[in-house]
Length: 451
Image 1 (cartoon, rainbow, N blue to C red):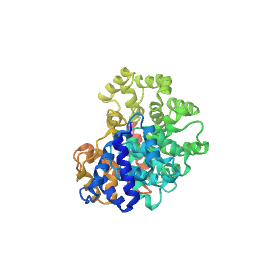
Image 2: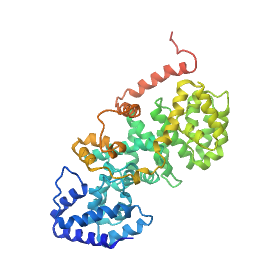
Image 3: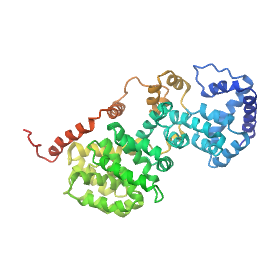
């Protein structure tokens, strides 16, 4: 599996770096492939460096890559391999997490592994960047100034993963075994302003799949206490993701199932709405057991469409599951005006979630490497603009960065992102007051004091 030319190239580069440490920045510039930087690597080493760049990405995604990567680090050490990982963090065709995990077992390499992992989080594609987060440490230094760029990109990644309704068991396992990571990504943001609560809800959504009976009961209890205000928050950017998290958490905590049934059968429209979203986010085996309740609600002509407009998961799971008849009935009712704009918007958002994912959840891992001119443009931008633009993989792969939205979809996405970044401590209170004035309107009667 490991070719002789690759072995020879690694031996050549390792020998050169060991005898001439000043070659390290030259080798890094060569692997970054940035046309704005002079490639001053000696010609006799360029062929070996290019061979490594060609063969390592293919080796990292091989079905038997684990054994091969451990063998590489055992035979050649981490001097050249980790330098390549750090310099090639921008690549979209490499399983960088697998490479770094193979090196993490060596205590002498852990500091270098953590550095390369931070580079990957800042520059890598969605799934592989999130898979590298546990290799950066236990999360206790996420708030350190040196990790400002890492923290900013991590928030963008969590935002996008929540938008796709992804489940990230490896990332989740890291969150749930590290109290410091839990506090930095969920605990503190959940008590902050709107933007922080959105991120906390999305982080819970993508990570609760890793909760097991062996998970710290202290963290589980804290999670349940944090979920309550997030579930009752009036902003859909918060409560939809919190409800999804509750549904996924119910898959591993059967005691929550009874509570969801009580909410679904109760009289509170808000709780019923949250419960239906949670219902539709249950794991497949649990949803199959309780699907009859969900289908009965959809088929009921007396059901309030305000409750059926329970966010993306119900629309997605009902309309794309085997219960196609019920999904068609719900869609037909919405198309004919039942529930008004709220239900129509909820159905559209529900169908947008799998569309946003694309045909493959792990499409980022096999994405082609972005062109050199796009990387050069990114390098010239300021650090905060770089962190934001790296979240838009499509723009980067096309070799350009837009100065303004190119269409309604991009414009809407930017508006939502900017709105969620509005860090006003009074925003939640204003949202609650505004929602209370609208609720009566949706139920067909004016609020108190209204004309």
